[in-house]
Image 1: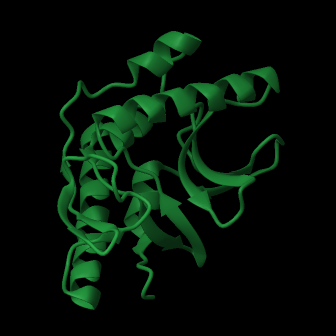
Image 2 (image 1 turned 45 degrees about the vertical axis):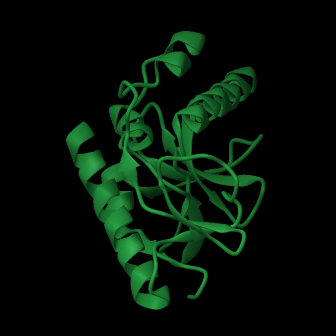
Image 3 (image 1 turned 120 degrees about the horizontal axis):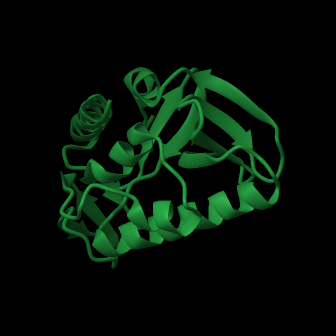
Length: 184
Protein backbone atom coordinates (compact mmCIF):
# COMPACT_ATOMS: atom_id res chain seq x y z
CA UNK A 1 0.00 0.00 0.00
CA UNK A 2 2.80 2.43 0.85
CA UNK A 3 4.62 1.78 -2.43
CA UNK A 4 1.35 2.06 -4.39
CA UNK A 5 0.53 5.42 -2.82
CA UNK A 6 4.03 6.72 -3.49
CA UNK A 7 3.83 5.52 -7.10
CA UNK A 8 0.46 7.11 -7.88
CA UNK A 9 1.51 10.38 -6.19
CA UNK A 10 4.73 10.39 -8.22
CA UNK A 11 2.65 9.73 -11.36
CA UNK A 12 0.30 12.62 -10.59
CA UNK A 13 3.27 14.91 -9.85
CA UNK A 14 4.89 13.94 -13.16
CA UNK A 15 1.66 14.67 -15.06
CA UNK A 16 1.30 17.99 -13.21
CA UNK A 17 4.87 19.08 -14.01
CA UNK A 18 4.53 17.99 -17.65
CA UNK A 19 1.34 20.01 -18.01
CA UNK A 20 3.08 23.11 -16.60
CA UNK A 21 6.00 22.57 -18.98
CA UNK A 22 3.67 22.17 -21.97
CA UNK A 23 1.61 25.27 -21.12
CA UNK A 24 4.37 27.62 -19.96
CA UNK A 25 7.71 26.24 -21.12
CA UNK A 26 8.99 25.98 -17.54
CA UNK A 27 8.57 24.07 -14.27
CA UNK A 28 5.58 24.74 -11.98
CA UNK A 29 5.63 28.25 -10.52
CA UNK A 30 4.40 29.71 -7.24
CA UNK A 31 4.37 33.25 -5.91
CA UNK A 32 3.09 31.98 -2.53
CA UNK A 33 6.33 30.03 -2.01
CA UNK A 34 8.61 32.89 -3.09
CA UNK A 35 11.28 33.54 -0.47
CA UNK A 36 10.69 30.28 1.40
CA UNK A 37 13.76 27.99 1.21
CA UNK A 38 13.27 24.56 -0.33
CA UNK A 39 15.32 21.92 -2.13
CA UNK A 40 12.58 22.04 -4.81
CA UNK A 41 13.47 25.49 -6.14
CA UNK A 42 15.05 25.37 -9.59
CA UNK A 43 14.72 29.09 -10.46
CA UNK A 44 13.42 32.39 -9.15
CA UNK A 45 11.69 34.72 -11.61
CA UNK A 46 9.55 37.84 -11.10
CA UNK A 47 8.63 37.24 -7.44
CA UNK A 48 7.87 33.57 -7.96
CA UNK A 49 9.76 30.31 -7.67
CA UNK A 50 9.88 27.57 -10.24
CA UNK A 51 10.07 24.18 -8.61
CA UNK A 52 10.41 20.47 -9.25
CA UNK A 53 9.72 17.64 -6.77
CA UNK A 54 12.67 16.36 -4.76
CA UNK A 55 13.27 13.16 -2.80
CA UNK A 56 12.01 13.13 0.78
CA UNK A 57 15.11 13.24 3.01
CA UNK A 58 13.63 12.58 6.46
CA UNK A 59 12.53 9.27 7.99
CA UNK A 60 9.35 8.20 6.21
CA UNK A 61 6.96 8.45 9.13
CA UNK A 62 4.55 10.76 10.92
CA UNK A 63 5.82 9.74 14.35
CA UNK A 64 5.21 13.19 15.87
CA UNK A 65 1.51 12.82 15.03
CA UNK A 66 1.41 9.20 16.13
CA UNK A 67 3.06 9.97 19.48
CA UNK A 68 1.06 13.13 20.19
CA UNK A 69 -2.26 11.35 19.86
CA UNK A 70 -1.28 7.74 20.59
CA UNK A 71 -2.87 6.71 17.31
CA UNK A 72 -2.06 4.34 14.46
CA UNK A 73 -2.16 6.16 11.13
CA UNK A 74 -3.32 4.97 7.73
CA UNK A 75 -0.17 3.77 5.92
CA UNK A 76 -1.36 5.40 2.68
CA UNK A 77 -1.60 8.81 4.39
CA UNK A 78 1.89 8.39 5.84
CA UNK A 79 3.19 7.49 2.38
CA UNK A 80 1.42 10.52 0.88
CA UNK A 81 3.17 12.97 3.21
CA UNK A 82 6.59 11.29 3.01
CA UNK A 83 6.86 10.51 -0.70
CA UNK A 84 8.51 13.76 -1.80
CA UNK A 85 9.08 17.45 -1.21
CA UNK A 86 7.02 19.53 -3.63
CA UNK A 87 4.83 22.57 -3.94
CA UNK A 88 1.08 22.25 -3.55
CA UNK A 89 -0.50 21.09 -6.79
CA UNK A 90 -3.83 22.02 -8.33
CA UNK A 91 -6.17 19.35 -9.54
CA UNK A 92 -9.73 18.42 -10.33
CA UNK A 93 -11.55 15.36 -9.07
CA UNK A 94 -14.96 14.63 -10.55
CA UNK A 95 -15.30 18.30 -11.45
CA UNK A 96 -14.23 19.62 -8.02
CA UNK A 97 -11.20 21.94 -7.97
CA UNK A 98 -8.71 21.37 -5.18
CA UNK A 99 -5.12 21.94 -4.08
CA UNK A 100 -3.15 18.84 -3.13
CA UNK A 101 -1.03 19.64 -0.06
CA UNK A 102 2.65 18.77 -0.02
CA UNK A 103 5.62 19.38 2.28
CA UNK A 104 7.87 22.05 0.72
CA UNK A 105 10.95 21.34 2.85
CA UNK A 106 12.11 19.64 6.03
CA UNK A 107 10.95 22.66 8.06
CA UNK A 108 7.58 22.64 6.32
CA UNK A 109 7.18 18.93 7.12
CA UNK A 110 7.39 19.83 10.82
CA UNK A 111 4.62 22.41 10.29
CA UNK A 112 2.50 19.86 8.40
CA UNK A 113 2.75 17.43 11.31
CA UNK A 114 1.80 20.19 13.77
CA UNK A 115 -1.25 21.04 11.65
CA UNK A 116 -2.25 17.36 11.44
CA UNK A 117 -1.98 17.11 15.24
CA UNK A 118 -4.17 20.19 15.66
CA UNK A 119 -6.72 18.80 13.22
CA UNK A 120 -6.84 15.42 14.97
CA UNK A 121 -7.11 17.04 18.43
CA UNK A 122 -10.10 19.05 17.16
CA UNK A 123 -11.68 15.88 15.75
CA UNK A 124 -11.14 14.10 19.08
CA UNK A 125 -12.67 16.97 21.09
CA UNK A 126 -15.73 16.98 18.84
CA UNK A 127 -15.92 13.17 19.12
CA UNK A 128 -15.64 12.82 15.33
CA UNK A 129 -13.85 10.05 13.45
CA UNK A 130 -10.15 10.84 12.93
CA UNK A 131 -9.16 12.15 9.50
CA UNK A 132 -5.92 13.31 7.87
CA UNK A 133 -6.38 16.22 5.46
CA UNK A 134 -4.62 15.96 2.08
CA UNK A 135 -6.11 18.81 0.04
CA UNK A 136 -7.96 22.08 0.29
CA UNK A 137 -10.98 23.15 -1.73
CA UNK A 138 -12.35 26.54 -2.67
CA UNK A 139 -14.10 26.71 0.72
CA UNK A 140 -12.16 27.47 3.91
CA UNK A 141 -14.50 25.13 5.81
CA UNK A 142 -14.13 22.14 3.48
CA UNK A 143 -11.12 19.83 3.05
CA UNK A 144 -10.32 16.56 1.34
CA UNK A 145 -9.17 14.01 3.89
CA UNK A 146 -8.30 10.36 4.37
CA UNK A 147 -10.51 8.66 6.95
CA UNK A 148 -8.05 7.17 9.41
CA UNK A 149 -10.44 4.29 10.20
CA UNK A 150 -11.43 3.13 6.70
CA UNK A 151 -8.79 4.64 4.40
CA UNK A 152 -11.52 6.19 2.25
CA UNK A 153 -11.02 9.66 0.80
CA UNK A 154 -13.73 12.08 1.90
CA UNK A 155 -14.72 15.70 1.58
CA UNK A 156 -15.50 16.95 5.06
CA UNK A 157 -16.83 20.18 6.48
CA UNK A 158 -14.58 21.27 9.32
CA UNK A 159 -16.24 21.41 12.74
CA UNK A 160 -19.17 19.25 11.65
CA UNK A 161 -19.79 15.57 11.02
CA UNK A 162 -20.85 16.33 7.45
CA UNK A 163 -18.74 14.30 5.04
CA UNK A 164 -18.99 12.62 1.68
CA UNK A 165 -16.95 9.62 0.52
CA UNK A 166 -15.45 10.41 -2.88
CA UNK A 167 -12.97 7.53 -3.35
CA UNK A 168 -12.48 4.10 -1.76
CA UNK A 169 -8.74 4.71 -1.23
CA UNK A 170 -6.03 7.31 -1.56
CA UNK A 171 -4.54 5.40 -4.50
CA UNK A 172 -7.87 5.46 -6.34
CA UNK A 173 -8.27 9.18 -5.63
CA UNK A 174 -4.77 10.09 -6.85
CA UNK A 175 -5.13 7.92 -9.96
CA UNK A 176 -8.32 9.77 -10.97
CA UNK A 177 -7.08 13.25 -10.00
CA UNK A 178 -6.44 15.44 -13.04
CA UNK A 179 -3.69 18.11 -12.99
CA UNK A 180 -4.89 21.69 -13.07
CA UNK A 181 -2.65 24.72 -13.62
CA UNK A 182 -3.56 28.39 -13.26
CA UNK A 183 -3.71 28.59 -17.05
CA UNK A 184 -6.59 26.09 -17.24
